Image (tube, rainbow, N blue to C red; front, side, top):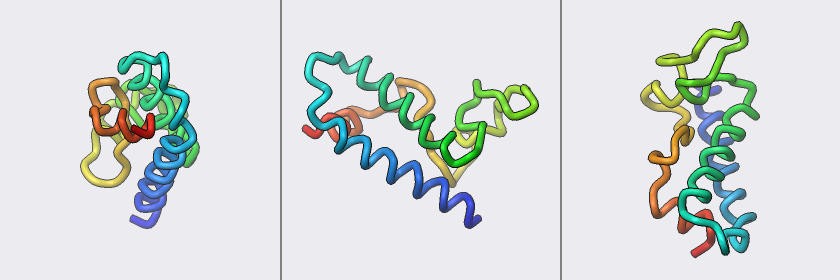
Length: 98
C-alpha cells in the first residue's frame, strides 16, 4: 500500500512539475501533439518509479505483455495516461498553462 501511494505521489508531482515547465512550450502544437506529450511524460513518470507495467501494451521484465496487470488496468493506485483519449481538455489547459 505504501508503494502504491509513493507511485501515485510521484506521478502527480511529475505531471504537476511538467505542466509548469511546459507552460510556454505549447504554442504551435496541436491538441493531439500535446496529448501525445502528456502520455509520454505520464508513462515516463511511472517507469521512473521502477515499475515496468504502466500500460496494458507494456512488457514486464520477463518480456510478457502486462495486459490486465498494468497500473492502467488496476483500480486505485497509480493512474498513468496511456492513450491520447485518456487526456482531458482540462489536462491540456493545465499542461500548457492556460
